[in-house]
Image 1 (tube, rainbow, N blue to C red):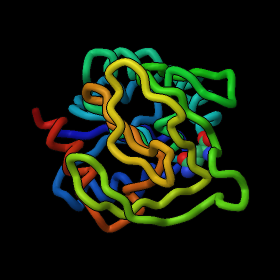
Image 2 (image 1 turned 135 degrees about the vertical axis):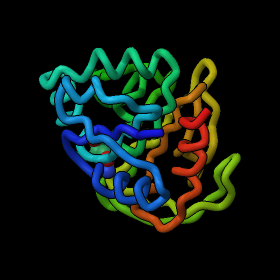
Image 3 (image 1 turned 90 degrees about the vertical axis):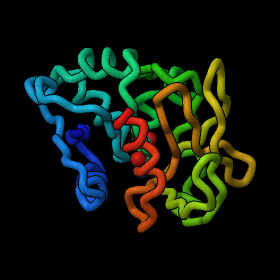
Image 4 (image 1 turned 90 degrees about the horizontal axis):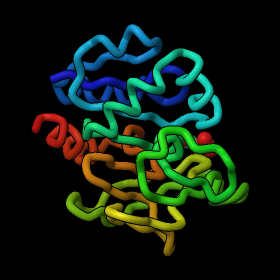
Length: 188
Ligand code: GLN
């Protein structure tokens, strides 16, 4: 099994480190030709969604990735990755992959609470550490999107089919259970 990580900008190295420490090999996606490599799951890391969204189109990664996501390839999307998947943004007219039926608010915690850490229950996983960095949250779930976790009344993690998306950064904490759940989905 091999996992692909979108590596055009942002926190891709931290995901790679975690996945490799769990004994699974990774490929980094930086250009269209990288899509010819074989992979069973996709990670969309945190970073700056506007920059990532522009680069995936310019580098010719957009169509091939969207097709795989629509075909049911398991995806783990964190923070900016959640923004790339969302079918609607509350405070931005842009839509990127648009494969996840949720409405997401960017930079939803404002300036004062730009970054924070907490622990909270996530369905199917247990109590997990959650690190938020200029994070979005999910204002609304639609269709088959299921809420997996909420913090202070706001939805911060969802699952829809094989798309797992969250506002926080599981790659920055020691806990491996979220990545493990994603690897289990990719293995199937
Ligand atoms: N604020 C970023 C955005 O809107 C997301 C932050 C993150 O990925 N840590 O793209």
